[in-house]
Image (tube, rainbow, N blue to C red; front, side, top):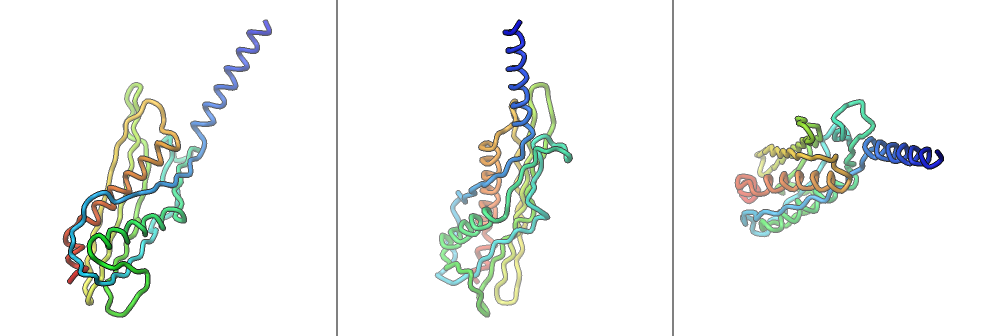
Amino acid sequence: MQRRCFLRLIALLLSVVWLTGCSAPQYLQPTPERTVAVPSVGQGQAVTVAVVDGRDGPQIGTRSGNAMSTSVITVEAGPLMPKLQAEAERALRDMGFEPTTQTAQGRPRLTLTLQRLEYGRGQSRPLIDEARLESVLVAKAENGGATYTGTYTSRRTQGYAVRPDLKDNTKMVAELLSDGLNRVFRDPELGRFLAR
């Protein structure tokens, strides 16, 4: 009798721990990285570069797909923006420019805005669920009184049988943002515009 009560208690505790893990919020700190070759168009010109967060807030969605859920996924701007800034500067250096955060009259300027970062639930099938992620980066280049604007959207759909944990979600968001950076800096028009 005591053994049966003990087993029930263990089962109950395991269920509570499992349910708590599924509904706990996640605070992601992705480290995106540009991985594609970029056009070499610069000749050492200085380019002012700034990365800004244009999102409405740090919450990107929920693990359950339910807006009222406590399983909120958050990506704070504080840790993310310096990482995006460093990657933008690295890309510009690889393109042949000299990136700086200092502004100067007549100097080309690139502003990279994280316009959207979303995590939602896709279609459900027996035993398989989906996570749908989307990011939008907007690059605004200014040079000689002219402006070039590019919008770069990245999407990812990931199927899973067990809900992704913190590590998996961090990896998916980092890969999504990396794809966005790749799209921005392999745009030949952006490089040519900054180099003219």
